Length: 93
Image 1 (cartoon, rainbow, N blue to C red):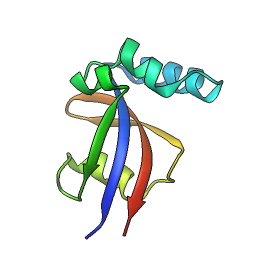
Image 2 (cartoon, rainbow, N blue to C red):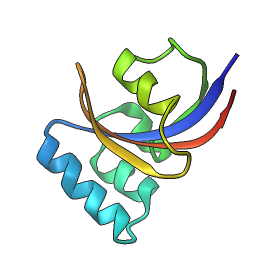
Image 3 (cartoon, rainbow, N blue to C red):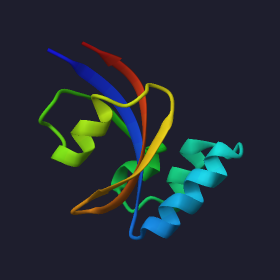
């Protein structure tokens, strides 16, 4: 079964999400941005979510994690929780 490791940043608005993505793409450290801005408790660990399989996260999140490019900042991805920036750190099929 496929497994992935990812980290994310959760914020309330698409605009904030896009601004943070621009900062990260400009060289800001993903983990530092997560610690400062993420509304998810995982923000304290730099956004790290650990390893998980398909179906363990909400559908919109799963789709990106199991199809998006590894190592690239993906998003904004909207879920019922808000807007996410997601970085897939590893994935096995």
